[in-house]
Length: 444
Image 1 (cartoon, rainbow, N blue to C red):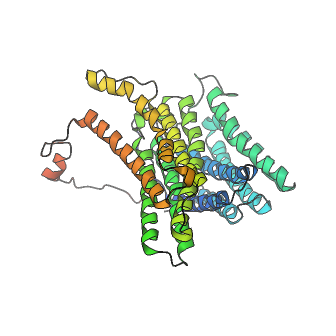
Image 2: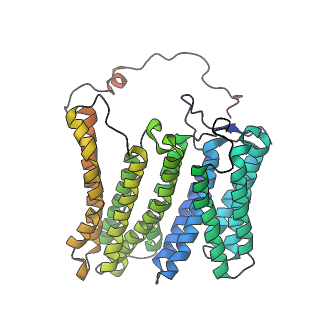
Image 3: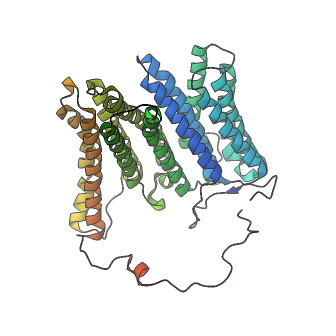
């Protein structure tokens, strides 16, 4: 409940202790819905791309959507704000994203929406800069970079479309490349002994990135359902293609979440370089997943609407996108686990598995391309067969990795043995009476 018009922000995390995980608030679910719509409209533009030059526009626009989401996410990963003013600024971000979704082309309408998001986020940081003096040395550069990005967006409103696209690319470069370099080099900051650290809530960061991955993956299945709602497709092909595409995208999401480590092992906790690497990889992973959605949609259309074989280029696009996504997830593994040695308590066999498991993981990124060859893409492939092969490939690989991890952690599966869930089945602990929450808590 909102009880203050203005309120002093607080830090979201405390890395000196075991801090409580930050929960996602309702307004962020609204933003997730807008980002899912953004993924859909950009994917629709990608589906109509005819030349390599045409590819630049939707990728730059998607990069700006992603950068908007990253700016919002990283602010809330560092600070807690629940005042009425902050929710008005959140609405500014949401309204700006909605304007960008309604006009997903280079032009004034998209530029005004982009400008509204940046001004709203700049106001959030300005409020923290004023109210929390101890964070000023860290936030000053953020304010400078955001102001520079806003200046480029303003210029894009008064120039032609080609120059506006260059302004968009420049703003995106400032919010990504320049921001990443500053995070690593720590330019214009006090010495480490006196600098104030503004930690991020790692659980929140991991959860929000997972939500965005699911939003990008889900847009393709939803898109073909919307487009097929007014048609009368063959029932069998329609249902088979939908279920296979959902299985493919669901397994890809399962693959992503399976490599997420606990808080203590997360890349954001290792160093600034690992944290920047983690964020930068998502700028590669999410567009790849968007392309995977486009390829899946083309396969579904070929099966349901066109009733014809999938062209060789579409088959390579489908399995190439899967291979690219697996490469990005291999890089995520390296960000989290690269350079970490086996535990002292590991047996020799487990040590060997942990040491050599990187080899099959690396080779697995080439498996989708091998499957594409086996489908005889020179003459095209049946779209249902292509979707089934893609889904089966990912599902079998996730099962194989899970089996190895189960053997390392729990040993061979034996039905009837006790495990960590047994106390949950034996009975409930007696409940301690007393107040467990307060309506007037300062944490609201």
